[in-house]
Amino acid sequence: MLAAEAPKITDWMQAWGSLAGLVMSTAAVIFTGLLFRHEIRVRREEQRDGEAAQARLIVCGVAELDVRGDEVRGAFWYVANHSSAPIFDLKAWIVANYAATGVIFEGDEELQTLHVLEPGQTHRGRLNFLDTYSAETVGLDHVACAAEFYDGFGLQWRREGGLPPERIVEFDDKEQSLLSLTWSYLWVLSDPFKLLWGKVLAMKSAASLHMQLAVLKRAKRRR
Image (cartoon, rainbow, N blue to C red; front, side, top):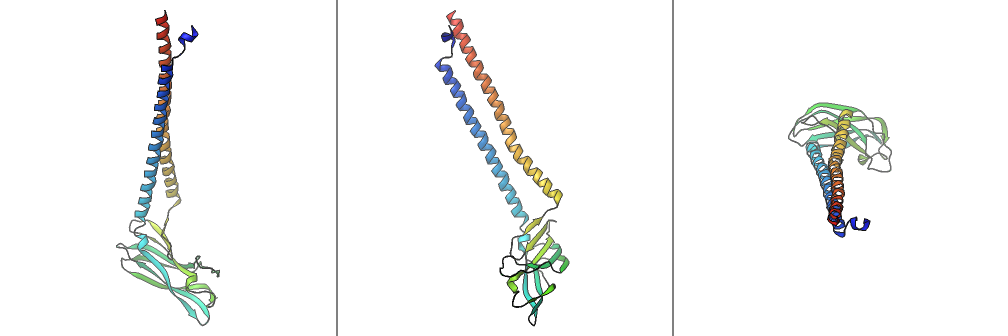
């Protein structure tokens, strides 16, 4: 009697077919989530690249050192605006060029400011070092000009020598950006897997019900 009411091979085949469908659905959901996550990352990179378009056209550097005798007293710097929009609240100073080797140069020097630098203009100035250095020790490749400014969209940037511009973000904006990014990832991972888990439970219930009905039908036929 028990052997007669046991599930047949066709029932197992249908169950395995349901399991295969479940595996394929799982793979499709995971692939969709990963693809959407990649799309979010690409769009964020494109947004950051677009935001830095003007900042990349702001060039700062050291033209020459102010050498008096065998001592270096300061540096002549410049900031050039090659973009089509003005920059605001420009701050410039001299720092150590960390790409250079062999010299330890204390860079945190005098600061100069400018309210507006119009498109196509170059602002030049001279900064005194806080200390004097030997001309045999400190050369032009040991120092760099650093600048902070606001672009035409009100975003604040920092450039140092030939390095790429870096966005200066307030703490609240960073926190908001982190929360936004975390929420995006969680949303990508949560909704598809909630849907997947619902499908798993539904298919499990359907397979169990199907096998129970098959057993009942065979039992009725034997009666």
